[in-house]
Image 1 (cartoon, rainbow, N blue to C red):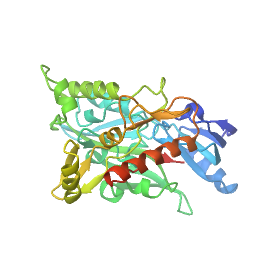
Image 2: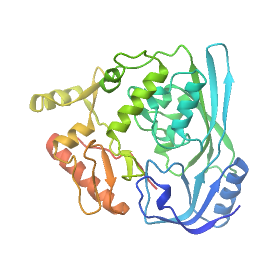
Image 3: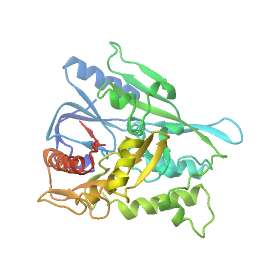
Image 4: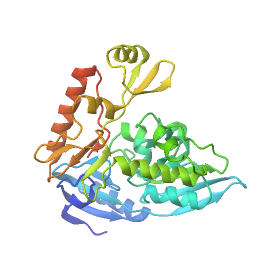
Length: 336
């Protein structure tokens, strides 16, 4: 196994944060992964897994071994005329997987179109958009638990993964697991979810099917989110906060235009982008980082900002929103 010392990771994260890894390697097979784990243990080095680099904040220097996940493969296993399961390598691109499943005639993932990153990273965040989350389709995940003295592949079913809004067993235990593959269930009879205004408006006058929903989602995301090749960013930087019904009612009394979505009878999700925009941050820029002028949820790195620059701005935004609304925003990207 070849390791690169003092490797530049700047181009491997979509925030384009300058970062150097003590050791770096690209892994394309399970055997290679076990070799890397053995190397790290022999030399008492910490392991970090990097996928598409789209939902992470990298420090200036990463001690230990950075493993660039590149285990590929898509295996469609038909159950009957309507149902199939697809086993996907952790290094596969998520959006390309969505397009692949649609080409195979299986809906279910269309609302998750154009979400950046790899398949292996998707369960960590329990990625979601427009009323759909990966947990809705996920059967199981195969991973290595680094806490075990002898590393081996372990399969975890959906119920074991402790899925919550943008959270999971993996996110709750950073650095403990390395995901190698994901199994998803798909059904040709799946009900399309088009209730969000951004999507329903774009479908007016069109035949509504999984492909057109996917295109509507792509258009909606492209209209709000900057291209990382032009403006480095990590997508939505803050989670939509969930509050109790009583808190929402008190906010509505003071801010009648506040945007919310019902979670259950007692809890509502607030639109973090609206909170940030109304607090005056939309379009803000300092010398190196800022807030996107089309979507206040997106923090941008427009002039070679470091990780600390990003943390500082995020904390200013969080403090401002908390003072105005009494709501604490939670950062979505993972710090490595």
